[in-house]
Image (cartoon, rainbow, N blue to C red; front, side, top):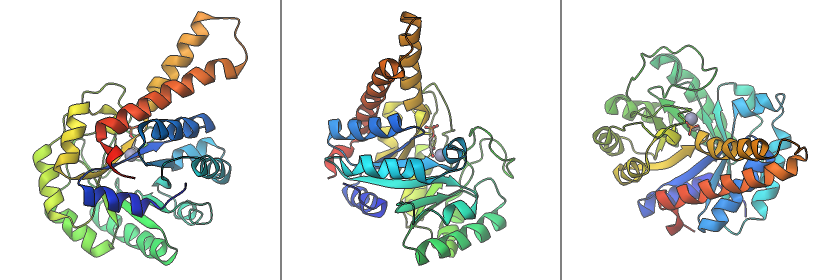
Length: 285
Ligand code: G3H
Ligand code: ZN
């Protein structure tokens, strides 16, 4: 069934674990995430990013409605989250489109600007029943990312993060601790000491972005140190595209998309359930 993101993150926090959040682009992604979650018997967050909305010709509803419909069929709890929103107009569509949460992303901006824009987003979100995540200390690497006010490799400062959360009232905070978006190899090294310091300083759940590039053991350690929401996108696309490529290479006469998408969807579902087991979310229900 469809459940609120806030409930999932709250349960993960009280269990000392993390909820996994997967980015979807197509209907096959949605089906794979739900299948993988059912296979692992673990609840999950489905995320649609602003970039994915742009790919869908700027329309949020078609994929959002499909995701909600597939989520209803799941045997585990599935939450819908609107991810990496920079445009307040898109944020304002979230509640009506069935999302219980969103991430407002002004992480590329300088501190005062991030604070002001995030504060406004929180005010709107809370007035409209949405749980809101924001970012402090820029996690780079996103395709078509806006120019950033921050140097490459910048880390989130715990004292600043504490102040940011207090002043904006955000429900969760994405932090820069060594991961980077869109990595196709698992070679990122996280700063576990910093994660611990941030978890101690910040009174809301911490979110790890760019988790595709983080090795399994590092992910498990990050959760132990206090990460409560783990965002994964690229790793699913790696599994999916590898399967499509193999299928097309092995049969050059193949034209029916169902023939190669079925295998790709199930490869993605396997990656979802593998990651859910790694993160240890199965303890949640
Ligand atoms: O918000 C989405 C995540 O940060 C995904 O990052 O594609 O590098 O796993 P990733
Ligand atoms: Zn991200």
